[in-house]
Image 1: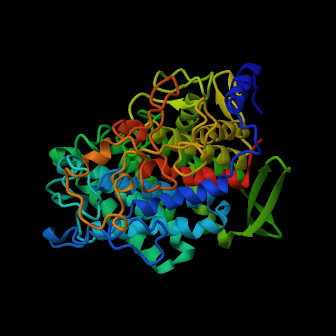
Image 2: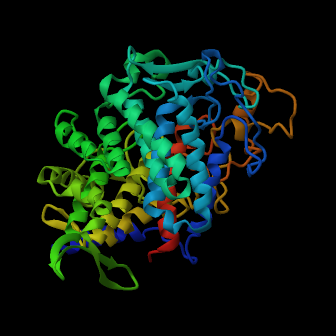
Length: 540
């Protein structure tokens, strides 16, 4: 083990314990249930019989019809009524990753989480049904944002936007391939036929993304910017897609693609970023799992045969030890996927990048000007909707801490180091802040706790439901509800809003303050994994 100076240990401990609840703690299982329920409020299309948020109704029946395709279904990204393919695909990828790594901790909520993924992937299959085409958006965002109306009433243009060979979009296509590949792992046991369909489509979509390179915000600038403009370039999505295809297919060609393109596609750039636009930190953490796995595998002669040794380290609050498993070499292909990612020294650079990223997040260690902590302990990055950074970066902290635990490793940050348990503590502190351990004593998850945002920036939540107000509410007729100081009539249970966006931990519970009060699917997606883990491992 490396050294653990008292200064780093003290700083991490102080951050992890500030504003700790005086009661028994949080009900992470309840928060998990609610965070999954939120996605039902974002559904577009014909709702299923088991829809639990009953104030929502069917919407956008004819999406895609103008272009001769079926683009019904999917999710509205946030508080509007547009279906943006880029953040939807990222949402699906992160929900799938949450299930892959932490599904075993979800208990009875696993079934609902899988349903939430399928609602997205069913749509993504429709959006990629035409070869060398990806339909990336439904709805005129400018016209939609000029209205405040329910999705059941919307009468703004449902314009369809696509990328193709002449108008490339490697970023959105690469993310879509990643989503389909990650989801194929989720359904491998639940629905093998559907899993194969997802993986086959992921392969073809990735081939399209790689063959016809370009950014979709160049091809469709006037439609997608400034809403989900690709500011970071498409290169990271190609590496991201290849990494997930390698994980899902176990094919060497994707590992070789990553090795061949690491420099060309700028794998080492902006490694401290992770979100719908920038995948660099996620790429490094995902690939590092394979690098770390090599520490657990070796081959030796036993009874005259080559035998694979699989050594698993166990480190938790209850016990510390290891488990040793011996396998005939004929089972080697089942383990080959992770080994191939790690056996080549060339791929060690991803592990170094991941370590650097983790160090940038640790209080008292990070010298990066864009990663700071508020007085109340919230991870803070400049820009709007700060909770998207909090949940996605915390997810990577937790995932990486698990990979390190299994390899009996730690992170070295210069002359300092941190254990997997300390990384988990930092991630948990962020989750607890979201759930109410903050200076305002406010849960930023709607419907969790007694004090939570009541006036979120969300059309369907803030307008009377169809049941309560059957008559149509037109484009501008909803303005009075938007400006009203009254709480939203429909509680969008589980929605996590953008939260504080300054160093004072302040939060204006007001619809017009959309950067603070608007929920998004990609805030909630990584939270599924975080809540699942802490529901099973309530750290003290």
